[in-house]
Image 1 (tube, rainbow over the protein chains, first blue to last red):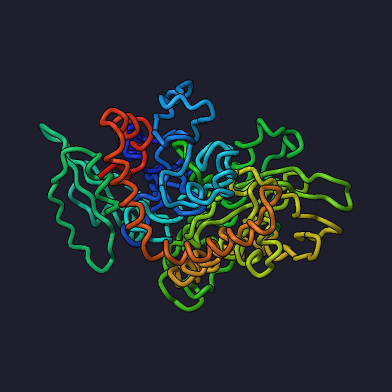
Image 2: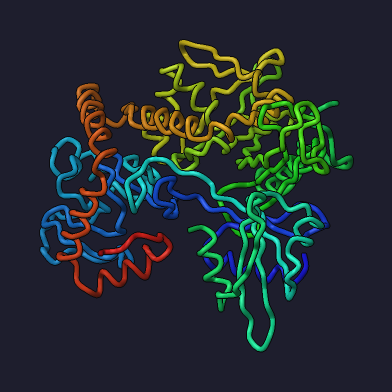
Amino acid sequence: MDRKLKSIMYSFVSSDIDVYTLDDEDHNHFVITKLLCSKCHNYWHTSLLECYFCGELNYYLYSCTSCGKKYSITNSSVKCECKNPKSKLIKACVNSQCPTNTKSIIQKLATKQGGVFDLKSSLNLSLNYCVKCGNTSNHYETFKVYLLENSLDITKFIKQNSIDDGDVLILKNKDTTITYDFIKIDEKDQSYTPEFKFNNMKSVAEKIFE
Amino acid sequence: MDFPIKVFDDIEGSDFEKHNKKQVTEDFVTENFKEIGWSVYRPASDTGIDLIAIKRMCPKNHTKIFENTKDIQNCKECGVKLIQVKRFIQVKARELKGSPKNQFFGYTLASKHFRTDPKHVILLYSDYSNEFLIIPMYDYLKMFYENESMGKTHFGTPAFRQGNNKLNSLRKEDNHWSWRSHSSKVSFDEFVNEMGIEKISNCDYDVKFEEYQRKIADMKFDMFFNYSRGRETSEKNEKWINKFLGNKVKENKKSIIKQRSATRKTLSNELSKELKRSILEGYLVKFKGMDFG
């Protein structure tokens, strides 16, 4: 892949956007994709866990089974300051109303497994409700990305590369400073007038998924 | 035209072991999809999806599965402008085990692998028989949803939530693929090779995207929250849990945000500034939208 295109590609990687490259020698574009909430477009984190019983999120905390005091999971050797000989630190659900904290039989089940969010626990699932709006559906937002540098003949570039509707064209203007803009190709409106209003690629990368 | 074909002359699937087969497997799938006109993209960064396959197709499903549309813009049959069809493929390559007459394909899928996008595809590749089972997310869930006991064993068990539910019920017997359980046998032949390609080439997943997405989400919730106790607890507790979950899921679909916001507020008051900062910087930093408010 051309080094200039590779540089643009890595700006997406730095924004936690997944990048895919064509399995071919002819590399004039790459693909970016992100799993998003279909309602609010917030990122959908498949590695974030929620409690199976109440849907509460994992806050990466230890809780004392005797007094409930919370500790960072970074310090695994910590003992609770309540010093109750029966106390254990577990990765419990932080929702005080959750059956794993209120109903004795379920509580026992969770404690036996080291808490809802223990690595080996069977009492959590990957995110089912969006972090931001609670919606239950997600989708892949995906674009093919092309780069056009120091040129304003956008229409010609689109035709030459047979770029499809919905693809993205990154425009890079290299003068005394580097500025960027981008276009989402829309065959119904081809009146592209770039303003080069972005000073860095990170802002462009995030704006594309808004 | 045969599909898949042996694209690498010098190697056999059986030459590879679990630890060194990932690259060659994904490349084998890639080369075969390229043969039938798909552009295939592979991850440049570490991600969950193994391949993205893209092809221009007629939204009225006129494009033939082996037709190469790279240089055409309109459907040869009806003239309609082709649309860009994208499929997100998760590859699971495993060897067939068991006796030659009764072989099984063992694989694992965890809750994080089930997204509600109908363009998500599971591709099971048996490198010993050189066969693909290509199953769109909607079809995969539907097979288990319509056969309740199969669904409960796959999605309701503690092992599924632990992410280590090794599924050994997919069988190949007398050249036919099926899901075998104690009480049923469901054919998977409709997903094999060309028939699987036919399935993922269906543009209804693109044209009627929201309809399929809603159906996927509904089936997923029904099966994920149909608790099966395994050896975890008693039958009485299983009943209680399922009753609780039935009500809670309904409530959560309406108001999970209210609950989460109340918990976040309580935590924010309870935790020290230092602990909050440590969690935010150490763990939640990669989850956009997660904080203490």
